Image (cartoon, rainbow, N blue to C red; front, side, top):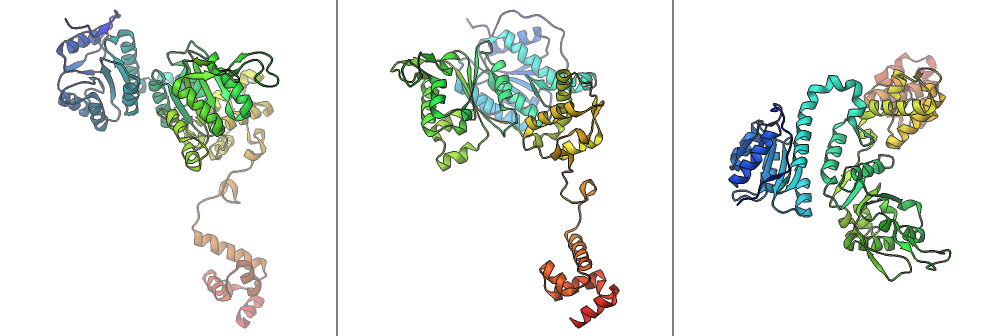
Length: 479
């Protein structure tokens, strides 16, 4: 007798129009059971045992969501996933298998799967996944309705962004949050690595457990070792009582190691043991304690380069980086700048008791032209400072920090600068030097660093050798 594919009852709903799921499985009984359940959820699925038919449905745009079994005789689920995403990069593929293994789930997500679900399928989780994909298709139809609530819509657990790079990052974070054991966040200082780490923890299965944060760059090795692993009484001078470390304290939850690239090689060796064996040993104690934690590490360094330079252990790098998320800099997502400024304006209006409506167009132009080396953290500091100094309803240039009050233009002409041909710039400079030297060929050639014959050629092109005063004419002739 076949095992039912889906567990637990679910509320029925009206048929959906936007999303047509395709169910691909070589087991007819599994196919029939899953089809019936998805119909009860309000969708109109297309069921098939033929991978070629499923690919055709994806290629034609008729089905943009496929639930595909991993184990099939003609093609396995991973191969189908690759082919489906080549046909339609925007398609959603959920792989299903009779046995759940972490490495299988991570491999599926790395290849682009929306999720990896073990059989028998959890009904509530399946409905949530289908509804989430369905909402993604409905979203463009609700843009006008959501404009006034845009900040709420684009906020991902405290992170603001609607640019493509940020939406892709949010989507990947959602996918790995359920499955990861170790994850590495890479991004420049101020880009929001700590916020993303908290977001991943909040949507993970251990969200109700502790999240412990440790800034590795802020502590010397001896103190960092005691903080992470704990110590026993008398282990070192000042250790008057035993104390558990962060890993023990976070048992069952998540440890976030910020700026892990700044740790020493000796500390990296101890961290490697924790990651490999999930066990810690307090300083001064022979007792080994087993722990069950999820580890998120973050760095603003290029760890690959550090590995080649011998500054970071290669084995630790590969343990940390099976799941790696890169956080884009603010300059890479300038389309998010208006949303971020609106978010920080609201935040600091409330904090400082102000009623600032917006910014002048001059300020907006300055912000868009600024390179933002400090990323979102720098932007927040700028808005916070401007809210303090602003006295009216709008923030103007005078309210900005001093470095932003100066136009960030590549020309001394400021905001009036326009792209110019290099030859035109050269001729303009020669004209200015010629006039400043009172038409003296000797002085002009010395300042410009060119020979007199080259100078005369430019003067001829500019018409200066003929139109100059008598002194210049005499000088040119005598030269």
